[in-house]
Length: 100
Image 1 (tube, rainbow, N blue to C red):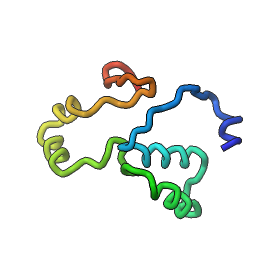
Image 2 (cartoon, rainbow, N blue to C red):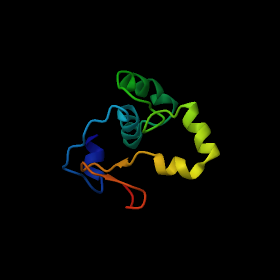
Image 3 (cartoon, rainbow, N blue to C red):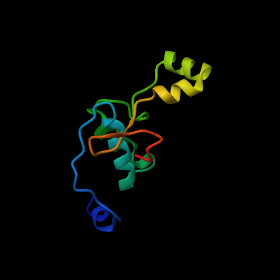
Image 4 (tube, one colour):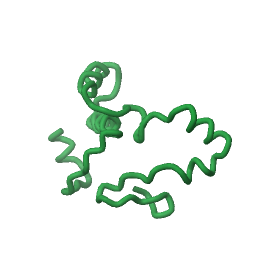
């Protein structure tokens, strides 16, 4: 972690809100950025992520079958009904507003 702090290109002083829906996903991505990639770190990631809420594969939670079927039938409505991305500053940005 110290090496990442020293070698990182940028840092943010803002504290992010805790989002239980994406907590496990966010922490898994953080661990991967630290270099815990591969089978040798599989059990470490498993134990570190075990107590966190959410889904480690989907940022906004695992989609249910109803959402998948409606997205297949009408792809444009699925994009419009998707919740906005978390921007980190308390406001949500849409796809038209730029990258989160």
